[in-house]
Image 1 (tube, helix red, strand yellow):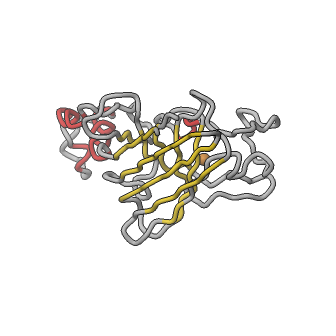
Image 2 (cartoon, rainbow, N blue to C red):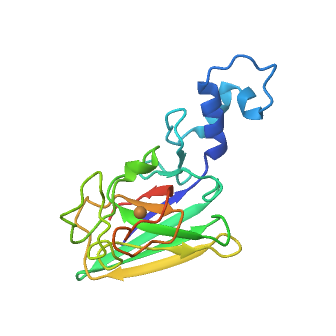
Image 3 (cartoon, rainbow, N blue to C red):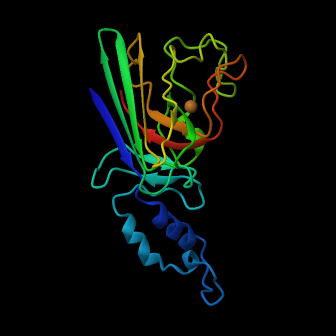
Length: 215
Ligand SMILES: [Cu+2]
């Protein structure tokens, strides 16, 4: 059993970081509180990985935890500060069950959710394509697999959710294979439910957040 967990804690502080990085010295005309936030406020991000200024991702991490398991939100309305996503994976005897528990997301909306191959980064694309058990031979880095023969919930990990009125949701999937070591590194939340038709299978709109996982 491997558990990966991440909690969004750093959104407001990143705003301060980005403002500080803009180099604005004119505090007299600023009508946005973030512009006037003194650089010393970045100390509130202690322990949080620091994204590059100006990048859209907001890092989040389990409070107090030191390590490589990070996460980013690219849409703070859908995946807000304080939300939590927990991923549990249990592989045994050629089968794997992956469970997702989310709290504090935007209420009453759909998210497509998949296991991706690369680790999360400040940019939504950093997490790379989906992990596939049987890898689509037609897929390339520029054209990820959208062939339903490969991009389907038996050959990939799909954990689409619809949040309740409080922004909470759970999902679970079981597949007839185990992860190859060191090839699946993240779970990505997308803006729509996952599509299944030819040419669009596996796609689910914009990437809203990413959680580092290891299986
Ligand atoms: Cu995905």
